[in-house]
Picture (cartoon, rainbow, N blue to C red):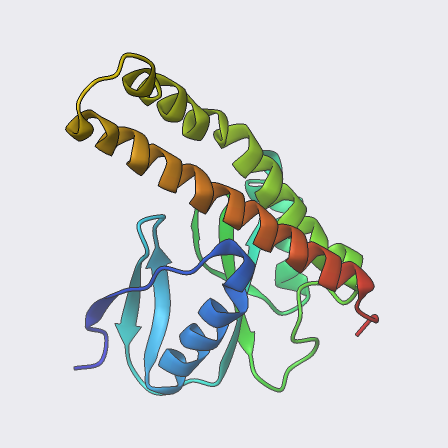
Length: 180
């Protein structure tokens, strides 16, 4: 049974990455150690003995994500890259080791959320376009059924705005927090 691959699904919002970290640590304590992840929320684990691991999520600019110096810096601090996809990297270290955080001060921890927010703002263009395209159904007095795409587009835009608001709250909370 040791070594069997197990896949699990979990969607976590950017501003709630601490929930993902806790979930991954709980699974490691049950013998499921993270081996891979993707942006669709599918996580791959290798089944084995229980391990006491701490996981931390980092969002990076593409240049930094592939920078060997950045990876070496974290490796020297006792962190191992457990999984990565897109601009997200998930790092692991043993519980009780050295520092259990990738970043020890609020502004540094907030920087990863600032990057996530910038990426979302850039992608926001693609959220607004469907609203504008589907708004023509209102202008042309088309039937009720033609308003469904507009309603879905507006709902997506609201979810996008809510996400930006929550990330902003997380950034403010971290920059106001005392240094660890």
